[in-house]
Length: 184
Image (cartoon, rainbow, N blue to C red; front, side, top):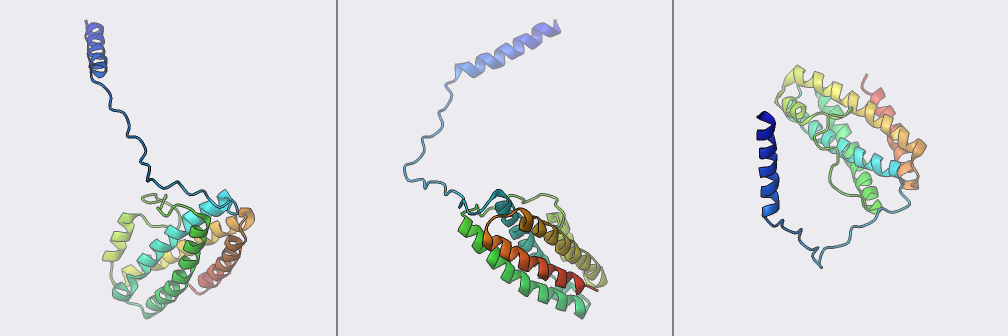
């Protein structure tokens, strides 16, 4: 009996599906712009690096912006201010390379739990912290960001192709080493 009911249910569902005409997908509009192709000077490693470094730096700048109001330590506020300046300049260069490569602008990593980046919940929790608790977490996140971005930067230096990407990667690697050394 159970098999009969199951067969009747499946037949009813399938029968109902065929009874209604299925809507056809809309025809592409004539005014839709063609999708830009990636500049062949940029290999997949270049593209992946740019696609990761941009959101890493964007999020890092977001958390550094909490320091003036949330930190109790003048040294942490100075560190955040210095890192903000260097990362803003770096981000402009990364975006210029991404645009030159004709890569998408959306963050393919949004919502991912990735090394060197905080989750959105962690960012929200950090924003609520004040004083020494904030300073402790921010210092840890600074170290994680510097370490992970240096690691992926070494990868693009080894396997990247585009000269501007490799040049920026070399600069970032040196900058990260100096920044990490300054953490004390």
